[in-house]
Image (cartoon, rainbow, N blue to C red; front, side, top):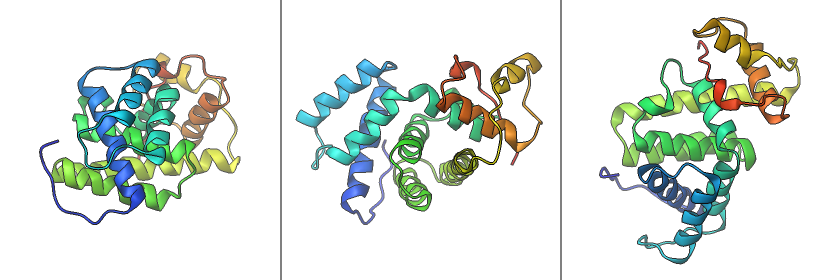
Length: 200
C-alpha cells in the first residue's frame, strides 16, 4: 500500500485502517483460512508496526470476515459485474472484504461504511479504484437491504441455475436477493459456487 494521502481520522476510521492492514497482510501472505486470519489478527493485537494498534472495532471487522469469508466474498462478486475477486488489486479486494463484512455483520449504517472504506481506497489505492469500490459497495448494500426487507422469496436454486447456465444471470433482482438469503439461512451448501454477476 504505497500510495498515501492525508485524511482526517476518527477512532473508528483508524480502526478500519488497522483492519485493512490485517486483511491486506493476510491477502499478501495468501492466508485464506479462518484460523490463519484469526491467528494473524491475534499477532497484530499484540505486535504492530502501526502507531495505533488494532483495537476492538477493527478486530470485530477482521473476525467477521474470517468467520464468514465465503458469504462476504460471494456478495462482493455478486455486486461486481464481470470483475472477479482474483482480478482486483490487493488493496481493493481487502477493502471490499472489510467493508462488506462490516455492512453484513456489524450493523453499521451503509452511508458510513461506503464513505469510510472509499476514503481508505482513495488513500491507499489508485484513483480509478475509488469509483469502482464505491459502486460495488452501493450494489452490495442494495442487495443486502432487499434481502433484509423480506419482500422477495428465497430462491434455493439461485446458485445452481447460474452455474448450469455457465454465464452471467440475466434474471430479476430476486435472484440476487435469493442468493444472499440462501447463504445467510444455510440453504446454500456451497457459496463459492455461486459467483454470479448482476446488471446495474
